[in-house]
Amino acid sequence: MSWLDGAPLSGCTDLTEEQLHSIHRQVGVVTRKICGIPEHTFGIPLIPESQCSCNSAFVYLLFDWLLQDAEEEHIPIPYIEPDGLRALVKACAEELDTAQAPVLVHTDTWAGNVMVQSGAFAGMVDFAALYYGDFLMSHDFHDFGEKSDPYFLEGFGKTSFDVHERIRIQVYRVWQRLGMVVERGFRKYEDPDLYAWVLPEMEQEVRRLEQMMNQAALK
Image (cartoon, rainbow, N blue to C red):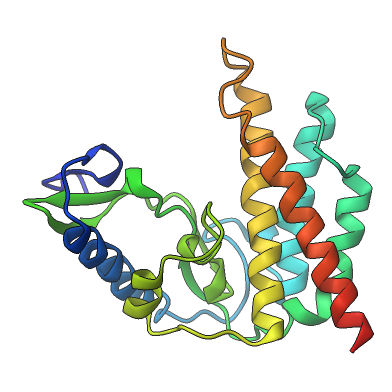
């Protein structure tokens, strides 16, 4: 796609609540359509070394690649050591493998990649972060904020989650924040406090995952 009319949602400050709700609902509808494209293996398109037979192996690989980058660049990970995070992700394997049918997922539908025209949803851009994986890896299930947008969930058609799904989402919340921690370290911004808010978020999400896994072990 070379051109899409509209402006990024992130820059639209004059939308009404009703318009915002409609846009998020449409993001859910389109995300569901993207997830309607199945695949036989988990992995990243056109990267053969990423292909895995199960979700837990693929998710571990994604974490491991980020952690290797962090270790090579001496980027500190808040609260937890890299090997500790690797062990935590491995401990989630049983829950992660309740996702058995890989589908196409867009993992980067943040507001800057959602296009708006005349107050309505116009489309999505930036398909570099497409994976074949768990449908819950879709960006808006594990976006920043306490909960997924209810209008996105309504549009997607998924408004309730079992314990395995909630743990899977929590793993992806940690993964998303880890990616931002590592990216922030690589970019070496002039302002050392730019995006520093992600550091306590990373700690909070890791602690929450630990708590969820401890509760699951007691049942």
